[in-house]
Image (cartoon, rainbow, N blue to C red; front, side, top):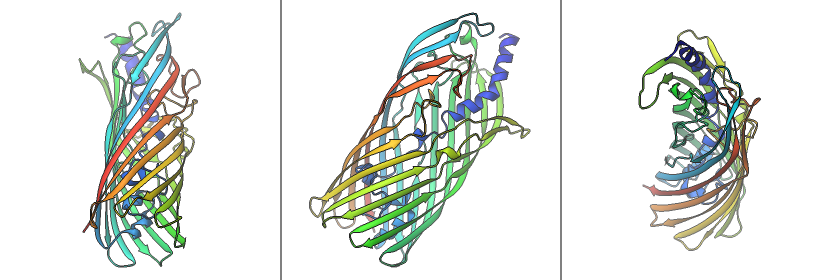
Length: 439
């Protein structure tokens, strides 16, 4: 490998840390709402109010006061099957060093989404008529994207992305009276990140000799949850829940290697940063028209705009390498659903929602081509006996029209990677099942 090539690698190795994290690590589309089979069946309408399932504590810890006598345990498992296909063109320089012209390649990524199984569990203990303890173990952020052809023309912007989190949330709840309850607790979250892309577009002559870049790291973050429920009448309940921002110190490496087939390490830079995932507020309501029919609704605000531009620093010197241009908008989610007790054992439910993504065309990336979404859901619960129940939920998410426009002026744009433009066809199918046990 020539000295010029070595200089190109070293010059880009640290700067790429910003690109890798900013376009994937904790983007809006990587936040996982799918924490409950019960509420999955209503597009999460009413998820901040009390009900047969204590999984509502993820959004509002005060709902733990709806738990029955003794110990309640729930295990939820959700299969998420996303589909995202990008079609378009990549216009790249004719040379890495002295571009005298441009090459335009048409591309079709096929499906870059990866299926994932998301587990979550909830435990509640009713100590008295007024005092409750709980524990929620969830995965609030995750999923991954991967292009099958790692040398596709847009490989400079994405080859693969993978994020894993696990969140532990102890909860204390107090039932003040028959109308008012409160709850709160700390959060401890572990995050693991592995992101990969090429130094330049493989479509540029000579670019295939350049290595790929991989960023990997992990760390722990802390935060809190709090909430309140209020029942103005016997038939109506309002819930307000808050999940704080998570402050996660990530330590890891940015590695340049020749290729997965010939993994000779060219450079290895230790980096660190503090990522702040957004806080969120959930407002829910539930009204019982009869003993058998209930209507529920939820509005959720997520403060993605607080991320702005966190800084990446050298672990060795503490010097700032670059900042991370998230620059997201806030996210919003609105859902409406209902449920009907078919008999004493069987309950059916349905719901729909609209989700406003924090990502728009000005910042949309090839790693996360996210946009507004429409949700349609259905589900059911079956009470096997007084101690055990089962829940099923299904959702189909329709992605709205989505453009990808990584051109000069876009925060991800790099001349060595070219202009990447096109359209995204996306959808998601979600199937969720759980069992609830009371001892």
